[in-house]
Length: 492
Image (cartoon, rainbow, N blue to C red; front, side, top):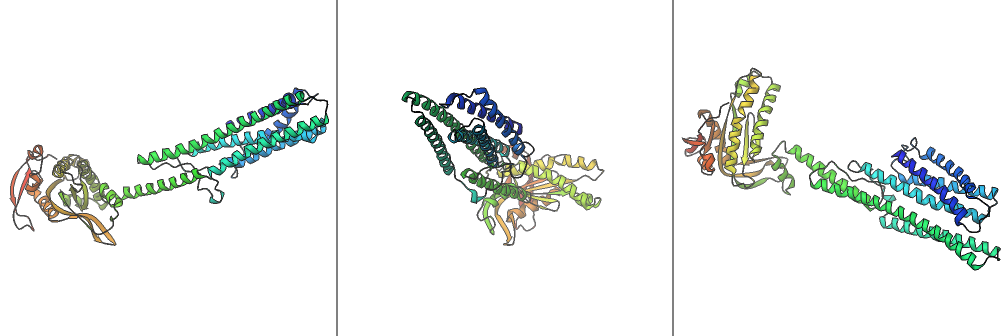
């Protein structure tokens, strides 16, 4: 980028020397006795000196200075000052060496200033374009200073006013200078006057209009690039990606939009981080519901029909006696990671962990196949024992077993506790029944027991996996509960 900027600046300075020399010899009327090579040679010396000064001020060694890096418009002011200096030096030389009158000298100054405004502004806009591309998609250039805010409409008015003022001044200077020449040489005819003046004014106006058009086109490209990054940021946010930001390199409405966009993305990123962390303590779906609900932190809940699943580890006490506390935690994390995967894979919600037991809920989202989901999760939990016991065998540790109990019924799902400390859970007789069923699995070979209420709502395919297991007297229940057990026990 630095070398590209230097190359474009060199091309601008070389073009400036050529255009000014061509204008002085072939366009400017009534200038005689000075040849094009001589004028070009003199101007080349001054423009070369100006380019060397630019390399010292704005070259690679100075571009990282705090006052210039990331601020193309400070560089524009320095660039414009160099162009002005070239015009003054060339005017002084011509007035001393060629005895140019003051009016002719002012043509050179205005010409250099006009070309400098266009060239320096175009370079600054190109540098701004590169800066936008560099900052696009990552951290912006910071929050703009409100005191320096200049609206886009104001910028366009300034640009339009400056363009008209520049054209008016240049044309007025040309007309005044040329008519002054005519008044001092009355022998010149009207035709001899009109034609060269028209050529000169047409050349200058055409040059300025083309230059202004190129500047306006580059400014439009910058606005379009900023807008494209803002639109891309919105698109990424819509797709759930919050690692982008809109670039801020100006002090106008686009910078305000970009700043507010970045604040919005930062807020969404923080919200997503909270939800992700919160989702590790409660189910992600529950965390999302709590965060989005306006009453997510209030006590109470709603009645729902749900399938409640309890699972517990068998032989856990024997296993834990031979482990350190850290090893117990490592094992439980290894085991529960597979249990959670089985529950989430079946569309359930992990309600809580109770020591070596886990409780899950299916159907609080209104799903009609809550019982099928719970049973599929139970089968997956049983199947995960193979990997768990293989893990234990590799460490010469005792094998474990597990049991699963499922019951379907009416529960309250919501926040339980106090305004200072809440827990999102489900409570009701169905929860107690599922827990009691899980406790009875130690006496059943299949290790999975479901209530009749659950069995009757299963799909035909899953019903074939269960057989009647009689009626059980469950603690806290006035009457026996009809249960079904897994017909073919899973091998661990």
